[in-house]
Image (tube, rainbow, N blue to C red; front, side, top):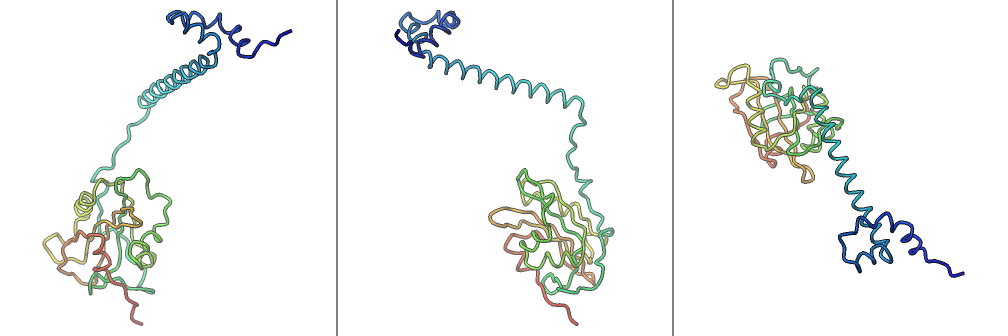
Length: 233
């Protein structure tokens, strides 16, 4: 008895069920699709079914997302008022410098505020070793921050360095007023590590009031304007 090929067996079994779907095709094409071309027919049908299921899943996700939004409190963007800093409430360093002294040019300062943000990236800084990150940005800054124990704020990601700097300066009003000499030296700008941009703001406190304006720094200026030296014993 002659063995019937598997293709013919499949075609004989599925042909009657699939035939109505190919009434539109010319006779020779229809004969091929329901005969020797049955595997091509099945592959096309599987692709159509998978595509339909994917569309259905996306529709279900949209519907469920809409229902979830109806019963969920809308996300509230961080407002400028929430980012505003009362510099007088920033922590005082716990003691005199023990490892290294930070200076803005020749002016010894203590770090009382650090603001960090990412530029245009979806990631956030939660869980990051911030002291190590600051040490990579400006060698020695991580040690100074560990020593001075300032307030550290992680801001939402920012669109541009200029926007971040303007926002930082608006949110850190000097207690003495902007037109008077102040203990506060406020720096903001972009720092690039391995081609990744970070945004940094520092609130530095000098022992004596100084006539230093707010500064917006380019990446190369951080190392020029901040100096580290050993404390006098």
